[in-house]
View 1: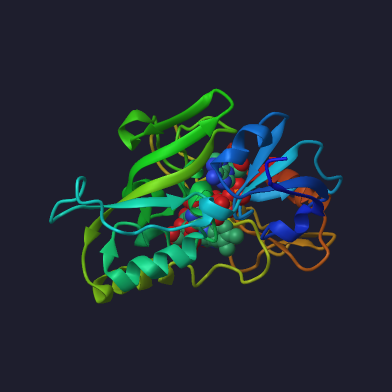
View 2 (view 1 turned 90 degrees about the horizontal axis):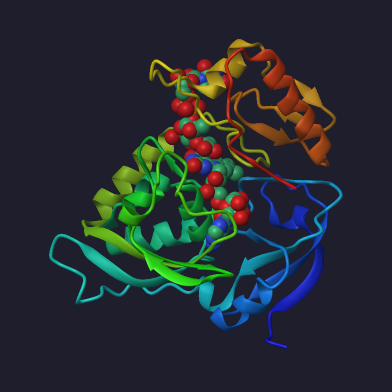
Length: 288
Ligand code: FAD
Ligand code: EPU
């Protein structure tokens, strides 16, 4: 055995929505365990903050990044850094983004503060290019290590076809670790930017949720619409199926009032699709 921890557990424990049946969870401690973990059908779990996992659970194993993939080396690499740009050592894909941002703020390192309030792991935030209108994960990346059953490669953002909420990294390629590209600033200035980005969250619900349900759609004319606004205008705020509800605070959030099922959430997504006249792409991932 290679030493990965393997347990059968409900995914409701690992998702911010608090929904999901059982799966075999492989918690990896290091690179040596990747090969065996990827030798059968698998899914990659980050912070579980964008997932709606089926009540029946999953047949695939679920890989979690622990051990060396949860380590943070923010030491500036002298060969890659200049006075304007600081490139760090490796930061693991399993590192929780909120704690990482706190460390960067204390050091006065800028570039990633636009992602404040996103309860992801670094690898998940990078894979989705999570962000807000104040910035996105790709603002602060120098290079990434990506592992798949075909092997390991290190790429720079310039080599990826990334865009809004999309890194261009294929599904089931694991973002194992990242080098950050940061701009030296001061703790006070970084905090100010984080506060500004955080203000935009004041209207978001406090209940358990996997974040926004739909991406903001772009019309063929190029005009960007708000998914929350569209759902709100369709009169759907407060709609409830079982213990899931379209949040009264912001209509693009579905919340778990306690004991909701994935089926409840699916029913609300179908209701939204049937009542909003604009085609909207789902932002959540539905497992399976
Ligand atoms: P998961 O939810 O665990 O997984 C999502 C996908 O990423 C899956 O396909 C998974 O396989 C893949 N993945 C995870 N880790 C890795 C990895 N290491 N390598 C490869 N693939 C991986 N999102 C925004 O963009 N902006 C926001 O402002 C925002 N606000 C939110 C607020 C709240 C309260 C919540 C609950 C969510 C919010 N989200 C937001 C959604 C969510 O946090 C992001 O989509 C985030 O990127 C998901 O990352 P995760 O680590 O939780 O991934
Ligand atoms: N609005 C309504 N009704 C609603 C919700 C919003 O009228 O029910 C209006 C607001 O009044 C505002 C406009 O729609 O005029 C935009 O709303 P908001 O500022 O909340 O921004 P958003 O586009 O709905 C985006 C991201 C969020 C991110 C916030 C803040 C998407 C899909 N959503 O929301 O990201 O936190 O900006 O930066 O891009 C996520 O991706 O999971 C997420 C939460």
